[in-house]
Image (spheres, rainbow, N blue to C red):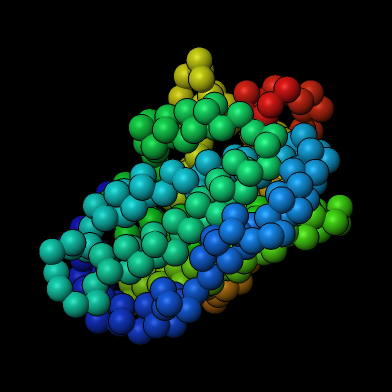
Length: 326
């Protein structure tokens, strides 16, 4: 079990820099893109043409890719769950004034909120989605909550968000690339700007971890090891559709993303390697004996995971999601 008092002290030291974090990693509201910048304008004379274009390309998208897009949107729309979780993390006080960790979470949430808003409106307009069923899945996902294995530990939560923001960058970027290859320029742009946000957010959380590694290296290494032993679960791991139990849909969604090569087991390994390099884990010194063993475990983990991943095959059978109109 971690020492909450030490965690709060470290978070307090870093909190003095939150103002600079906000300036460096987030974009002022008046300057950042909004969903309406990329969606057809109903008041425009081109609206009918733009709508027809969206609906035509949506019908042509491969099933697995389209399902992955919907699942990505649902994941983004469950943002209230993520904000409420992070607000309870040790070292975060909602009642403090000035630039605080609570300020960061609210501002980060405000940026992330635009992602589900943009994709949700696109999917509504495209005419291929059973919106009621998609909305039921979203409501279930928020209602069911999630357990990402971090407890209220800020170290584990920052490890998680560093990994997760990188993973969502990969997923949105790949959907955009595959959409562009088929001429779907509008969707490609939407996914591209979302992916850029995720990359910027990943950079922020990785920066927070790097800062903590300077202040409390042994405990951060141990937190990293613990998260990787548990394996990083996606925030939508409790996903279900109507008539299912919580989490029953997640495996089918993961298989779809794997089949269309949007997010794969190899991506998981690559992200792990990138984080090890980013934080220079191999070269950190002055660790406790326990942390040194954790360091050794982390450095060997990618090759272990590679051997497992190389043996795993993805099911070829497509699952019938009730999100997609027949």
